[in-house]
Length: 335
Image (cartoon, rainbow, N blue to C red; front, top):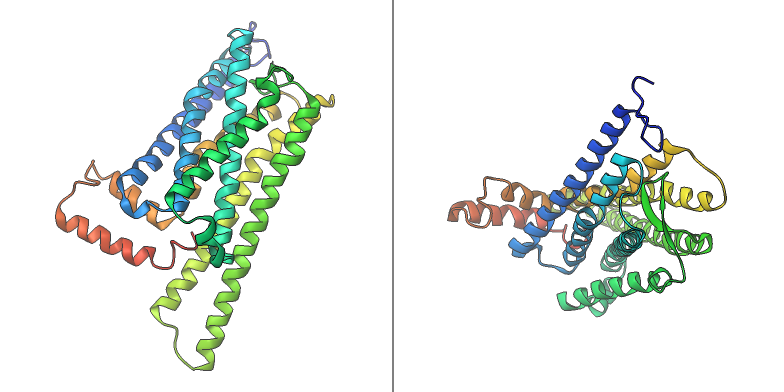
């Protein structure tokens, strides 16, 4: 009892509370700062002004909203072990959380679909994604679908309540949760895996054809060919990472949400861990869509060099542009 906090509703020790609150604060700050950096470099670097990056920009804004509009409530709940605000506030905060979660998941699926069409169905790409304006319309459509999914609780047909186990406000209808997890979340996961699997197959087949052609002509692989091989590896790693992180961060909370309403309890620690994983997707996204992409990696380095990004000397700018041209070759289409 010496280390226990007698007034903590969930019976946690002071150490456990401190660790949870500290980690949650780091998740919140990392999500906010990491995604702000993504938004900043996309705005400042004209080389990043393409359709795919419009979706990444939208995803970053969604994660910033999650970090600023809901995570503070989550941190406060972790600190006290209960909901510290009114029921109306819980309903509003829960609605914000769910709409942002839907928008984030749908955007991740849209990025996977965009890359699939770009690599596997290039003839359709210009028809479906003809311009940045079209990309903006797709982003608006994502938000409309997210709000449409939220109509049951926005209209008052489905209630929102605070869950002590996960320290969040969420819907209390088992039917609604089952439909969202079984149809929406699972559907997006299947779409992502299918798209990236097809991308991987297309890249491998293209590589095999190129290799066979080179062997048939007894020509040593050129620098472009070697660079293409490196690109293949980067595509595979990026695709695998995107799919794995999405599954890892969203599957636990989805399982707990379904089983909780069915009367099964995983316990406080596992439930808390599942919430941390869910929110961690907001700060992991900049690493997946940013650092693993050579364009963003270069832009990040330039942005973090003491504010010289976008207004450095002429030689530095020319050097940066030259490096970009080398790195971007063959990567923009696949990544």
